Length: 200
Image 1 (cartoon, helix red, strand yellow):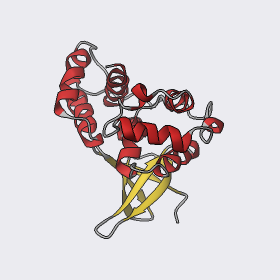
Image 2 (tube, rainbow, N blue to C red):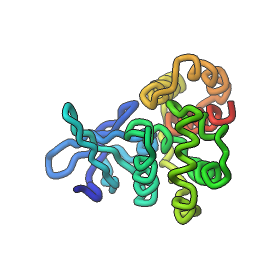
Image 3 (cartoon, rainbow, N blue to C red):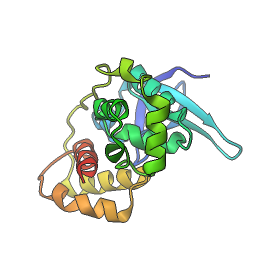
Image 4 (cartoon, rainbow, N blue to C red):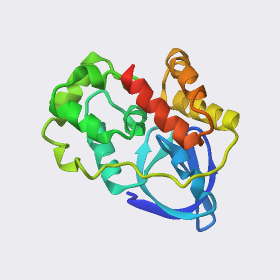
């Protein structure tokens, strides 16, 4: 129904951004909304997927068309809904995801929130040979730097992890390492946290 929306980033929250277009503010769920921390009040293009349920119409957004296409592939896997697919997409090592699918790496796939062994095996079964063509086109964009206070940036990043479905126990595991990094933006904290969670 929607391919993309072009508008100004008016607000950033742990699980979504508000994008204004023609006087309407669209709430768009994203894996890492803080990648747009340097784009407040600036016009951007967000590729959109609309999920319709009886009780909600939810917009999911991506910075590149290739990311949206990978998200749609994940939705085709039995047992993976939009929220789970978004949590998988939040970790920007999409090359690692594709490699794991193509090489039957169940252990890597089960590191994503909400993905157990059965779902990981289903991902391999449903996606193997179907996502390799996206490889090389999915490198995450770097956000523009924005000065933030350490405590605010870190707390926002931890809230974003919670919104993605990571447990309190998993978040606490990486929080200590994040605190040792010094001054980072929310986006940088979140990217690092996602990498750390995939290594645990």
